Length: 179
Image (cartoon, rainbow, N blue to C red; front, side, top):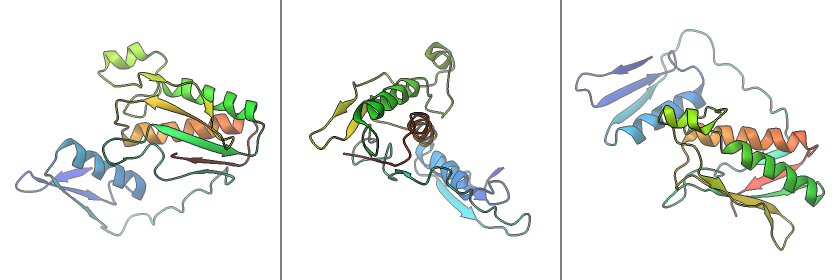
């Protein structure tokens, strides 16, 4: 899957091992974060199966900006704001459910039934989330405390949960962004 080169300070991530380019990028970033100073190269080997076409977005009306739950200057973005074509109380309820569900997500992206299970595996889960608040423009949002560091697998799961709860609430059009 991953080959360590001669001096042990380089890692080669190939398309044969990780056909999904997004997954390949996540693995490369995980190596960079875990082992600072490590050189991580991605190589296209060719051959094998042609790259799969990306699946169409089943909810094109729900847009999540790329920096949501991503890195900020000194920490990760832990606060979001959502604009939606839904009654305020429906949006707030959907975000409350999403925030609650996020507290069961480990930094590895896995959803745990009980945070104690995550602790037993030495996996970090969010400490708490704020009340969903509506700003002066009518947009709703909340903060989730991840001690300033949201790992990529956790961020991906957070985004999935947001979409699931928005869709479950009947919201077809929404824009999720960092305030």
